[in-house]
Image (tube, rainbow over the protein chains, first blue to last red):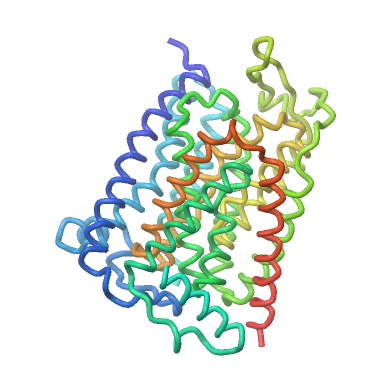
Length: 124
Length: 303
């Protein structure tokens, strides 16, 4: 079986559709619960503060989503949204490997590499 | 309704020099509802004009709603991720996108985005606002000019041949072959687009389309479809840092991404029914005004 661009796009499209559905429903459901619980509090986004550290790392988000913090669940939806392009790049990378198109395996690896750097880059 | 009116009143107060923090009291529920509706509008306009919603989210949140620019950038970057993936999910075939071009140019864009996020972490919000104002004015110009049928690339570009970038796109009489030109120039502009993306929390889709359509002579529909594939990856390159620095506040991101997703998916359905020329003008004027306000805000913030 040869992997034409159209076939790869179709496969990655199906994967993306599934992940968007998961991410959007996580954000929507957790958002509804959040508004129900905290909707009457005063909104204040005028001054920036980094906020709790558990909402700012993948491990913290996973941990707080599994406990009771609803903001953690919302953030898990946001995190899965961030991971979708990474998955798309991976799918294309795999397809290039199967096609033995080493030039594009190299190009995709560079893109994947800089994405991974950004996920682990900590600027204080 | 009452809340919206009071918001306009508070905005008036702020124009007269009063700071918002001493006048505004609004509940998270009403605030989320306002932001959701505004984001639906942004997503609708963004997808109808093909310029993306992200560029309008930041000024919308910062100027009338008084949100800090860093929160606004985080919410905007999340909305870019939602738009890009949402479009891919809605249309799994993506007949027009050229993934080889997209992947190759993403080398420049992701590295640019990385540099942009590092810079944005080190400079003051007022500088970000100033650059943002200029980018908005330039985008207004792009929207005003629209795209013209370009002269076609000849297929002699050395890089394009080596990278096998030329492709085929669906045409009225079956697949049509097209050639790609000026790869080094396009690659350089992509690095700039990536830099702006990381710096400002936008997808810089408009600039990406300019690079492909006008510089590299790629057909317009291929350019926009490829740009949509690219903006998600560029945004993801900035998102890790934004998340870690706390720019993505879940309470604010939630109504923005849900609104933008709703708006852009509705927009894609409405596209064949709407005359986009007038909408482009409305969009151009809106972002030009927001750009000037943003520029003013940025420059006065330096003092």
